[in-house]
Length: 501
Image (cartoon, rainbow, N blue to C red; front, top):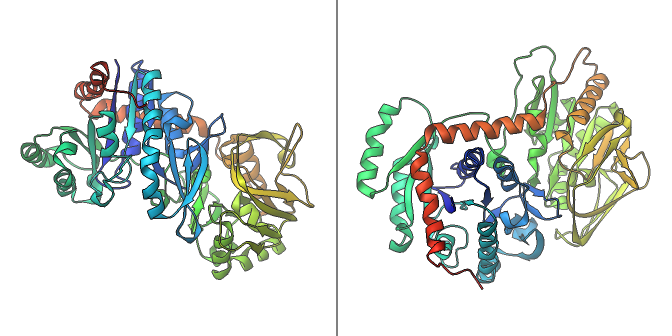
């Protein structure tokens, strides 16, 4: 088969990303070579491909669902909100500009050809491309020059499936209202509806589905049940979760992650959410930060601005007290920079210079060119276990004392002084050996005798989640109709829909 489809949602976080991932895993298991695509993504949660391109983390997870390597073409435009109301515009994996909301709207006509070329490139190389919209297709204030929803569908000849989240309420009004706000030309591309996160008796829902189909002339392609624990890597703070105590019982290791205003890559902590004897909280409370067994200062897209917010909340005092008491603290990327002595930022923020917290002997200078890399090494202070991650930052951090956290051939990364640790690498907690060694060390320092981390494999957990998404699609959606919708775009290609010049 050859084909494509655009999955839109009635609003942000309606389940578009999950449906796309589920479709990708189902098709991959059927032997279809499939790729995900999202023309425009606004997210502080990003990933680095092997070629050194920055894309949305959700698209990297969807590529894993499709069992293919993530690449820049899968997310040609990534928007990263920064300080002062500006947004960094990343095009084909590299920073292109910093723009205001109005400035970005003026850029869109120049970006549409880039988006279409990326999509056509994927369509040439894959049997199927499952596209994800952005926000809602009924954002009529943004329809002109739209390149992510119906503008993309019209330009590329894509049939559209609309997803609604029944768990939030107002499902029928959301679906009907979205369709009603579309122009006749846009509306004609919508082929059907999908219900997401349904709990209860399907027989109770059936009359409403039948009536909405009668009024709109569109079928319901299926109802996905509410399935906790199978979510995809989120794009914004709506996706933040916290973990209580797992079934293992016994002593609990408490982790407090400082909830920064522009926190990025919060999926760094997904492995901790899987730990059965770890209780994790995202918090702005200085008291909770001080009381935790492990405090983590995460990454951010506005290091200096978020450092100011951290001080206003009194968390600087809590982190200083932790260092004096010998309690473990970890800084990641922007959080690592904050733990240092000085930050010189002439790139991301409006304040060019700031004094750090002074807990690590490092200094950071921001440069226009962004570091995008997939490094690997070992952790000498944690039994020499292997560790890998990915780097996304403008700041160059220089260690002036202490010990490196990670080492490798010609590599010294991060800093460690006593119980204060820092690294520029995201994703290190996904490395099972390092995560277990780190948590055992925290437990020992904090006197949690007999405490042990879980023996699960985090990569295996992720793979199991993707398989469950594929099962949800295969078991609950009308696969024959979905295949016909996918092939519709392929037929248009064969009929001579022009490629962009």
